[in-house]
Image (cartoon, rainbow, N blue to C red; front, side, top):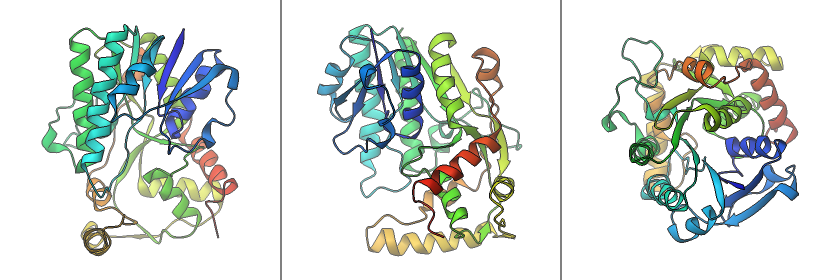
Length: 333
């Protein structure tokens, strides 16, 4: 039988594709016409096939699931700014609904839906969030988080109706093959290019992207349908993350910590001009600085305990990320 993987050309999905083919599984990759195929270059061509389709178009999705017994739904429209925010809802919410409906009709026996910790709650007392921390749609900052929150609700609804959907919530993956790059990858690139003069008081749960991919395969094998699993590792402030990068690269970390109000005003002005007046994507989307108001700390112990998810040192992942960005032309200084 064949495994269907969405998002296989992306950062996390390409690592899922690699692990699946290394296990000898046949993988069907749902890709868009505009997708960059760089991350698929090293996969065993004898075990992979590409299927052209888009999450916003339900027709091809039914053809894509035909003959598959396992589905990993990793694809998402991950942008903190969009000229038309409804694009995010069409891809992330409607696309998830259409895909899971097609999987239900095809009788797929194992499904892993990739959500995000952004759809989870953050405790007010500063302790790490868990899979059961209370959260509501009103807590979602921006269209990306809100669309992923609603998409996870769709996945949960299908699970409640009996579809074997396991939900995973990756925290902040770092590592190689971050083509776009992601917002966290862009922080690493800016640091390497000496374009990060200051930090703000925020924090993230960092995790090796390879461990996230491994966690998804483990979720398919050991996860309980309808349950969530946080795929994360180490909680670090931005200052601690940059200190690690400084140790790895020998480059100095920023010494200045910018007050949140100053960052809010500066980014707000940039967005007013670039996004509001020029209708172009700003270098620093306002949703990003709004999210940074809260430390995104989470507890991955459930996935470690119940799935056996690995916990590779975050330093190793940061080092591989820095090496990959340098080797692939992202570093100009």
